[in-house]
Image (cartoon, rainbow, N blue to C red; front, side, top):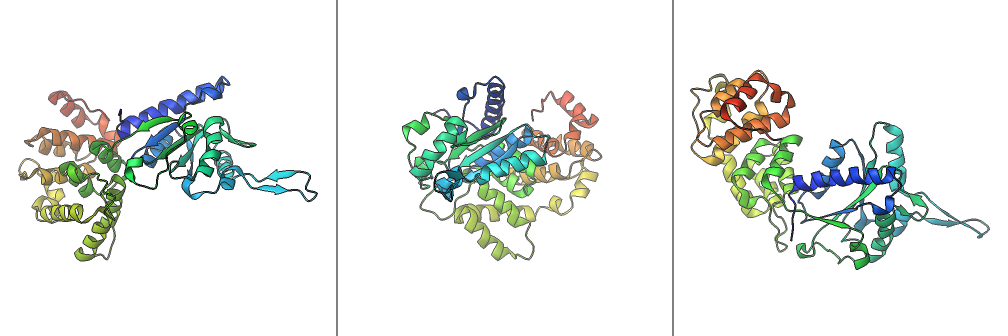
Length: 357
């Protein structure tokens, strides 16, 4: 099976949306491509669509197809008083789209995202097929510039998935996605997930994403994002925090992550990052790779145009030079102005490295 990384799926989705826009301009809507993003639960399929819309200034309306009744998708049929005609109410998804269009004249169209397509009952899939195939449900049409994107889990995930009928599959272009640690970490940097989660995943990729239906909780990109949120909570002692993390990623991943937190808590550099940044040539270098990942992640969150020069001096002392590359790339993802910083430019020029973001 040909599979996509998350970043490849996002780039391909943007290309599809642009292509569909060009078809609409030439009145060739019948040739539109409708992506079906397929992958295990918690992988981040929704975030692919959210990022694609955000980066291209498109609106986004989301539907959980497994939780809707067919009438909610197509509108409720209400007979007239004389019973000679039938009126159909405008569905909520179309009202939401119209409100977005009215409230933001700068939008470049948008996406109607039908999630959990494979979990939806057959009656819903039959109604959704017209939306997928024709961009409408009954009399209600998607506005110009708005396109359908769908997503669902695989049969092997045991997530209550129904096999899609052949006539539905024929309307869809499958995006088979798999998790990629670096893709997820880059996304986590963008949205500000706690640096300790990012560092842990880079150093412990065995616990990045697992799918064991026999367990109540499994580590996935979505569950690790929630762990990052837990680390920001106030009033949780170590025992209760551990219990919550175990309930999110499972016992094994929790034990490994909590052990990692205890290790970096004893590293002096974490107690005073300012001291390290102010004296980078004398600051000690941790021996453990996982601790170094954590320290690099912490420094990337602290980097700015005033201190990046000193941080680079510390980076140059690292034995594992690729960690320095990750640090600088993460820092630039958080603060795009660093890309034009003189110290960063000199580091790239002198080290012969290319920063690809």
